[in-house]
Length: 373
Ligand SMILES: [Zn+2]
Image 1 (tube, rainbow, N blue to C red):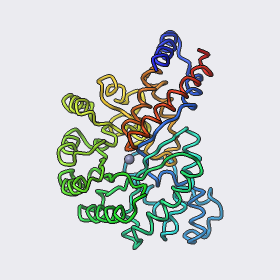
Image 2: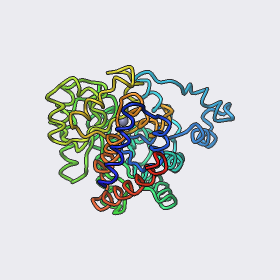
Image 3: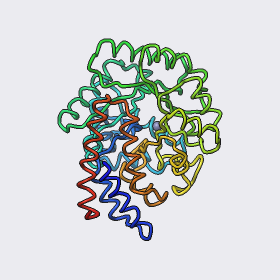
Image 4: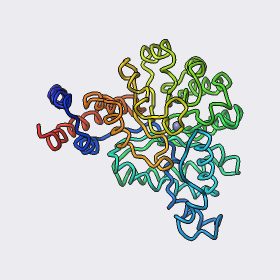
């Protein structure tokens, strides 16, 4: 470990005079990583949608996945509402519980491409439930597929059920009840936590406080999106009313010194998704302006994630390259952020130790291979 730190420090020293993005890109592609904030709907490819379209004949005139992509107008996203619209379009293809066996088709390739050994994925059941689908049916089809993937690839995928603030508190409480009874009857479930996503404009954290309190009384882990589309007051209220173990985004925190210090002192991890924040554009328009640099320097716990890889056309490795190229992160700092991904995750303590050992082992090899030391 000391050996690794001193080697990384040596490379960082050498790079003070000249950085080498090409070498970094190769280096980062070799390292194992955890990703703890992405949405399964954002891993659905046009190919999977095409398969569902053939099954349900929603757009019979579209004979290929490209034709379907054009028909649906799946292209650039400019803000959070456009992104939510795109989500809804993707969700509209899932008509039967069996369809959920197709939702995760892209996972093995995505994890392999980015050397992700452990992933926590949000799944939002609300709109499907409103269309008459059954929670247990959907989740068990989905979980069976995830089990197959984990068995075949040796990678680990866990599910966070998004209780959702888009459809009101009663809907969120119903979702929580579904999760509780599912967990009670499935000992080996991959559901690891519940979350609160959806439009920040539609529900205040205070309204959802009782739902989170109930989850916590049931010892179900909780996370919440916050400060992605609203300011520091919403973050304060998220901390106070929801008391989540992690916060999704927290992008606005840089506007409030006391808030940043509180997040640091309480060591609440932020699940940061830089490209998503730049594209939705609420607090910055350029990657070089992203506050992750400020948060890291202040000693806050930051993790790196993609949020919506297929929708934004990005991969986790791109996000690490962004830190190196646009935000001047050193190799030592980037390796610390990879470690944070594992330590902030909900995997068991034993698995965390194993994952960090694998990271150290791979670091040795990658440093030798890329930087020749
Ligand atoms: Zn998200």
